[in-house]
Image (cartoon, rainbow, N blue to C red; front, top):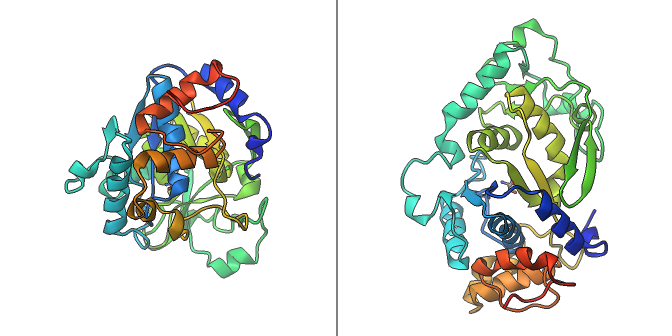
Amino acid sequence: MGNSLHKIDLHDRIRAALERIPKGVRTRFAPSPTGYLHLGHVVNAIFVWGIAKARQGRVVVRLEDHDRQRWRLEHEKGILEEIQWLGFEADEGLSVAELEGVSAYRQSDCPERYRDSLAALTTHGLAYGCGCSRKVILAGQYGEGDELRYPGFCRERPDMLSPPDGLTVRVKVDGQAVSFEDLLLGPQKQVPAQQCGDFSLRDRHGQWTYQFACVCDDIAQDIDLVVRGQDLVFSTGRQILLGKMLGRQQPPLFLHHPLLFDESGRKLSKRHCSESVSAMREQGRSPEEVIGEAAWRCGLLDAPGPLGATEVSGLFARVGQTARFGKVG
Ligand code: GLU
């Protein structure tokens, strides 16, 4: 997939996307506190804030800390501090000032939200417990790509319909295809039953999964535009399906933006310390330089140059007026 949109016209696609995004849209920035902020997150922040503000919308900041094994308090603090240092301000949600208290925008503070949603699925016979070991599942079939597809061994077991504690909980996925129009990538069609089968909502340790918590939060927080990296596009069909099962009438709009890659072609991740915002900050780089570098590396600017967090909406709003992206000013 890569940054294929660099070659085709990212500029034209953003212009068309903006026309389809309603004014006053609500979107979110949803980092996982399992590492520090890196340049890939900055690209995401540029798209999230840039698009939301170009459409007079709001940005909700929530912490996706469902993975309690990998969560670290220093990451949670670091992420919020660096977002603030960069100059991206939440309209709603968590900021450094609210770190201490309980928050509806931190997943670990909202167990009832996920329990209630799971109860609703269970009542309708849409969820079940699964005691299959990884070994058993590995012996099953693979889905599309190299994703593991659960073959449904426990699906029809009457004793699993009220999922017992200590077992994985899965959702029953029917064979329907889910079609959606990605605002940058165009029409998409996914068949979750073939990609992953009945995917998990809660693991055997009682931890809610990303797919489940994310869909519950997007509903609870009235998110109507999801802006995230292209690596997550394959999650979208199943999230639309799950949202529908949880009573969501209209799915959000989706925009999956280009990612940053290292020299060997691997997606930039928390492993890349040199690309972390804190390392760049320690080297004496300004927030504007960091944002400008991220905007250039993902193809939004023609050349690296300083760009402030409040200027990113100008970058998107100007798209209809210029032949190429350039520095706002
Ligand atoms: N928490 C996810 C991440 O940090 C983002 C999920 C999403 O935007 O749906 O990669």
